[in-house]
Length: 146
Image 1: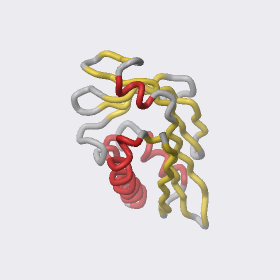
Image 2: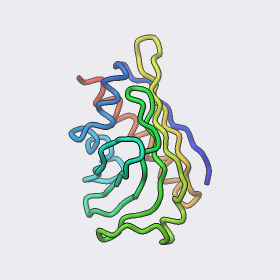
Image 3: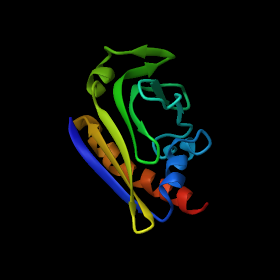
């Protein structure tokens, strides 16, 4: 697994970017880049379970490891969700087990720098290298239009 960093500067305050990232109404709008109908099921509290699901209900089983409002949100990926069941020992689960995904927001001259650092397995590298920049552009677009 390799750590990759994705970064974008957004002409909006951190509070607004944070809301776009994690609000139930806007989360599906920017994550549609990863898959139409994407959604998260969680309360976003540290230590809580987070399910990152596709329109079909399949996806990742994770845990919120950090939630510092307007500064940092981080997840540890633990397994997968398939056909409504959570798996910690499937092949896909083993590829992602222990991977960390961190979102950091910093002030920069009245703008917000959003940085995403993600542990990515080799077999998923090309996918994320092409989709993360598009997803960050969508976050920027949504944040700047309000």
